[in-house]
Length: 387
Image (tube, rainbow, N blue to C red):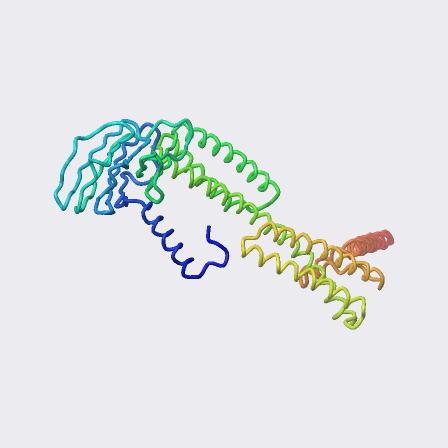
């Protein structure tokens, strides 16, 4: 402890001594140039693994390595075989290979005075058998002190994921269940009149990926299943897009119908300044704005938001349509439904309304015509009798 009121020079001196102590206790090795073949994940009990690396010794107190310390190297690979050599002052000195999960080199074997020293190591083994996919330490290098403690900064650990092939079959079964549910959703949406073509195309891709995974090698199957999961997710997303598009498309005719009423009020009846018509237009514009926002959200991939927005637009559009119909009834004329269609639709509607009257007139005229013909014929017969 530094006494209260100690001078700054004493404090600096204590700190310097403390740093020196730390430096003395620092690691005497550096592990590098690590190469693992193959790269990536390993298969439980199957993958042959080769690890190459080197250990550089940092000279301290005139020695390459403390005589009382131990260099320890471990692996969780099965059937591990260690091949190594010491390179002293550039001269390669191979050592006998060893087997097992651990390799220990004592300080007296690694301690040289006024020399450069490097250790070149290669370890071969098989990925361990694991019950479930997990990470394992395929290499650990560390310096142990005389008290069997790891020297700070000396430890190097290399890990790899070891996959259990049995889990692939479980993943395939899960993917098949997800595909079944997706197909049911697609069929249901299709029955509701939603365009499911994009979702169905993505579903077909996922089916192909799952079929490819069944029977493939572990790493290939894992890739296929990853693709399938992405495709299933995209399929559900595209279903949302189709549902959103349908809701939006269902709202548009209602707004168009309201536009027809507004045109009728403003053009045919010259009511553009009527507060009731102005209120209808304001409500109509609000519904149209919500519909526009729903379209924007579809383009952004926010399909749930788009559906919610379109449903709000539908509610407002139905409300303003009811207002327009009530106003039309209030001013005493029938609903101008056929005006909305314009042109041919209006003419057809009018003809259909008067058609019964036209038919009745034609029937009356036919009866009168026949009666006149019969009357003339009878009169002619009477004149013939006179002669």
